[in-house]
Image 1 (tube, rainbow, N blue to C red):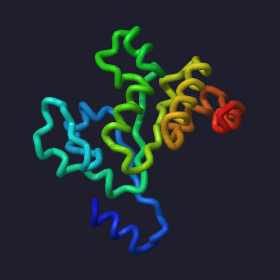
Image 2: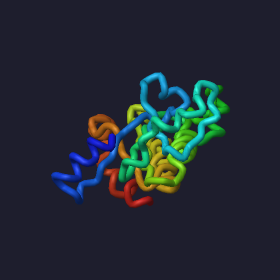
Image 3: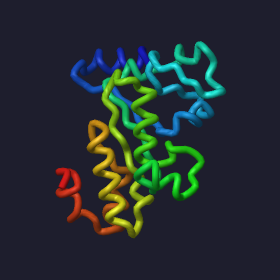
Length: 160
């Protein structure tokens, strides 16, 4: 990660160096990726005492984490029998912020297919992301077309 960042910055020093990852940190080790900050000490049962040495968030200018859940709040996730609080937009944001330890900005990402037929839930999810993180990344614009939501975008992205 340090070499990749150095290569990018050597070509365009003003470029922001970032990455997208899934917010499901408690399972992400299965992908061979530790996107947390080196300062984060996970209490998860699989995390070794030196697991933090493989973390790379501190090399980034910001990170986008996929908060890909139809439930917006932790309470909704519990009501729908999700196995853990982080199976919600709010819980995924909490997990992301915990793992990043305020070292870099976090931008929450939403999977728009999770809100098919439920514009109000999508609005709530966007609001949660904008209130709790540095913004929102929408994946993927094909769904904005499919659901005919373009007219909603200005008010959503302005926080209305």
